Amino acid sequence: MTESRDQSASPPALPPELLLAADYRRAFGGDLRLRRGAERGHLHRLGWGRYTPMAVWEALDRDQRYALRVRAAALGRGGALPLSHQSAAAVWQLPLLAPWPEDVHFLTERATGGRSEPGVRKHAVGFDARDVELRDGVLVTTVARTVIDLATVVDLRSAVAAADRALAIDRSGRTMPLTDRATLLETWERMLPFRGSVRARTVIDFASPLSGSPDESGSRVSLALAGFTEPVLQHPFEVDGRTVFTDFFWLHLRGVGESDGRVKYFDPVMLNGRTPAEVVYEEKVREDAIRRQVLGFVRWDHATGLSVPRLTARLAVLGLTPGRPRLWER
Image (cartoon, rainbow, N blue to C red):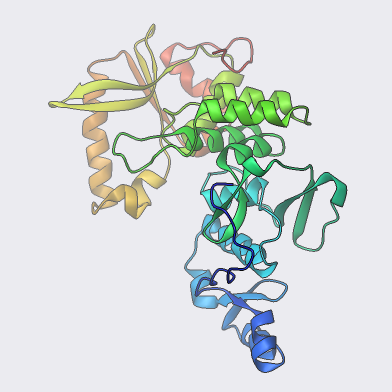
């Protein structure tokens, strides 16, 4: 494990947004205060004996809500088992294109069995100590183990999006890689044999550090499944004395494709102090400059990128034709 645990140490302090009924029972002999708060709409119930202020809950997006539920479940159980699968992904902030599950996922040893309980899913698959570490006060599978476990249970596009993020580094330096391909392969080999190993290896081989967003990852899977020739990712173009990069570029056709998600125009981090209108105008200027250097330029939205038929129709504008469905060989 990356951080060693001192069994005699005090348990980690709960984040201020988490309230546990067990603490109230010790202090007041009961948890009626929390239940009444939930009944009156002041608190939101995250699970059995776990609450958060309603104002906190309402301010969170879907990723943050699931991550809070996961941390509450892990801390409420005393951290005896490591979080895994989608729950570990939430802790590591690995993206999924599919909705988050209702359950919180944990790993257990094979001998203990996989008995689960309401709101909790236990995977009795066993784990190596090297595949678990302490993060923000909770035990969680490592990034490499999480990526591999995800590949065995989630849809292909979500698995690739998580793997791409684990490897990714952006040019601004804001995003650093969480693992590397060598570690992924070493972890995969150590886990053998396991159900879904072939699929997990396919995801590892297909993953790229150059994918700029979950939507780009999902589009990349659709492009491969449609049998299109593999595009160049993040191809540079010179625009008004500066270098810009495109999501997908087909050199033989001089064609550019871009996955255009909402986050670019509405996420405060992506806006970086600009208004959505300013971003739209900047994108138009950038696109016009790139168009002068290529023979074709197409954009598509989230829904189109996740649909092979719709993306195939969109890319026909560039002269691309589908072929044998596959994930590109490396």
